[in-house]
Image 1 (spheres, rainbow, N blue to C red):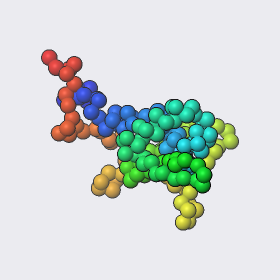
Image 2 (image 1 turned 45 degrees about the vertical axis):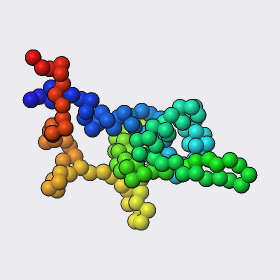
Image 3 (image 1 turned 180 degrees about the horizontal axis):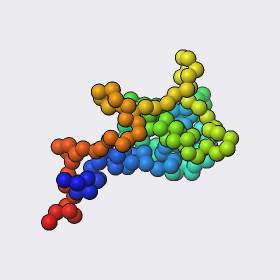
Image 4 (image 1 turned 30 degrees about the vertical axis):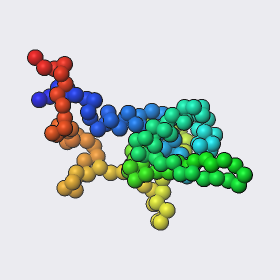
Length: 159
């Protein structure tokens, strides 16, 4: 069967995009990864409308990417910080890949605005892709998506 004959809505990419596939959500995640974890700090740093931010944070919490942790400053009501869950931490390579692509293709004449460094040694961080047998497959020419048991046929292609 050809790829176009499968229902694309059950694809893991499609499911992930439903959770993180918009500008504000990715920028919220970037900020949380970089230690900006309180609602007011995130809103101020991003310049995003508070209602929009609240919806994005709720989506990330409901999806198990972030968790809300209460805190209270003396004399104020309880508020919340947003912390990465283990599922959220696993999104770091996605953000690094986006940054690498942006550095390579959108940086402009002055170069990239930031770099990701390994704190222990100071080395730059880059992603690589390899198969489970250790072959480098970063160029993607030899990759293909293979439907598994959970894949569904797209009804519009049935005769």
